[in-house]
Image 1 (tube, one colour):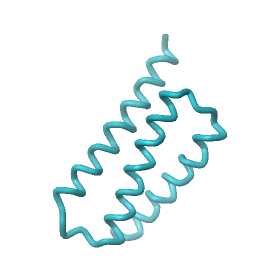
Image 2: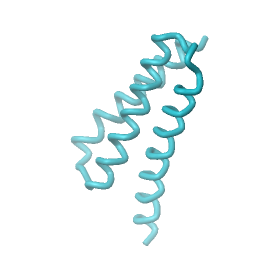
Image 3: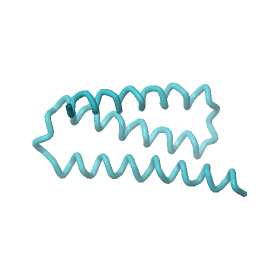
Length: 81
């Protein structure tokens, strides 16, 4: 039961996170284009991870997305300095 709760929680976090990023981005139309693109990329990655976790995709499919998410996060941090 504990593992199921963690898996469900992870999916919810990615789903809610992707929606939050997309909503906030839409509310800020003056966001610089490079920052907006990086934020949208991260939101898309979160959405794909949520879908992949629902489909119980193997690590071989999710690990590249996790790395891409880390890269997108690093890009966002760099653009916000």
